[in-house]
Image 1 (cartoon, helix red, strand yellow):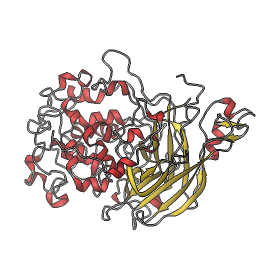
Image 2 (tube, rainbow, N blue to C red):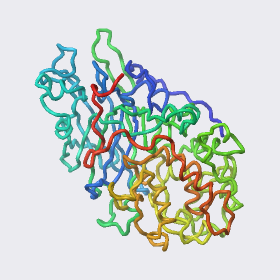
Image 3 (cartoon, rainbow, N blue to C red):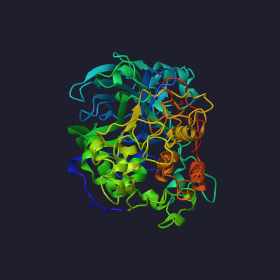
Image 4 (cartoon, rainbow, N blue to C red):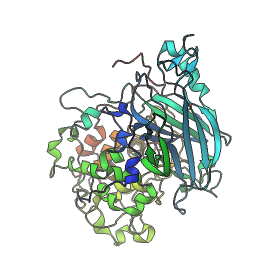
Length: 577
């Protein structure tokens, strides 16, 4: 892989992290960059964007912060930080650089009873948190307050603190319900504690890729941990591109595609007061954390560039360009290639990338992938044609994953050949096939991209799957209900990751399968053990990739069926230390 010069953070960006919370000093997930690991209250952990299953005229966006919250974290329980701007950004127009819509949350904390060390006593709360929500419809130039004095429920400490007369004399579910606000502009909003919806074997994956564990039981490293969620349910009419028709032309209408990312910012200077008073924050606001696609900064960007990635916007990233090499030649692919280091990671043995697809295309790191076709009649009229998208998808030699991994993370995928299912292609991956995704929005970098025209897959549908688009592709290729034509047709799970992200989606598994070339296979660039022209491309290599599992494939709690959908946070008295 290409080596980059190590960049130093500006002195201003370093100053924002002088004050750190001592409770941050434990191993956890989501602590994806060295500097933000010391500032957990401003640390984005995950981002979700999906059409609301019980209200499909809306989209729900959930941005989570504060990694690895112990439910029993007293006496100073976790809550949103003051002097932090928590923001959700929406891009809906590729013709205009930057955000179109920004939601900004700022939080305030008060102690109602500072005479006690308890967080809750006799109906009073300490660290009682409220917020103001502002919305900008001009990309952040001007803001209007749409929620003031919004409620944040207290931590789910235990039955005496919540239910008893010595505490709040209520139930925690009632506290959650009372904290669901309706903005003056119509959005539903919830800010507060939640079970961490991410699931992954942290111990295994960071032990040099031991997932599933080869000698022992895999374990969800985030089980019994909480986070703080900012959830907002927004009418599609608010989010869609200006001028887009009120009804989409079809279920893949590109006018209904949005890009979503979240961030946290602090002011440039924090001055500690010698008399013990609250620190003084001043100066310009500096972005210290961001998130779009899951796991980008954790497992794609190397440690020397993680802080740099965190302070870029997606729009900076798409034009900056030097980080692209990590997607063109991903480190994880080195461990899925027997010619390189595949044998060193036995857990990844089922995951092997295409080195000789159709006996002509090599997607190994440093190889050319489809670049040899550049400018040829074979790519004319496809998304790989310079006349359509310029050099975006075939930028040069030695960048094999510019056609699959890079667009998945940076532009979304257009409904053009070759990005259609192999169904109907008659063995030619560059031919037109069955459409199954269109979330192309090429003016920004790493964002969740969601086509809001795609219908919702019911969570009770027998075909619902946490494998998202991967499962939609499998059904589109194999199920007689879908593989008999090349029409635009709803296939269950077309609304799943990476077309947005549902809470149930197993993004760790999907991204590992994607690195292993599953998207290439879906469009007809089959695995090496398939001979071009053969009758059946469902070879052992393909079966191995599709049947691979990480050892942890679902959350430790069931999600709610209505807004805010995240599960109730773990209670301090129900989990051990």
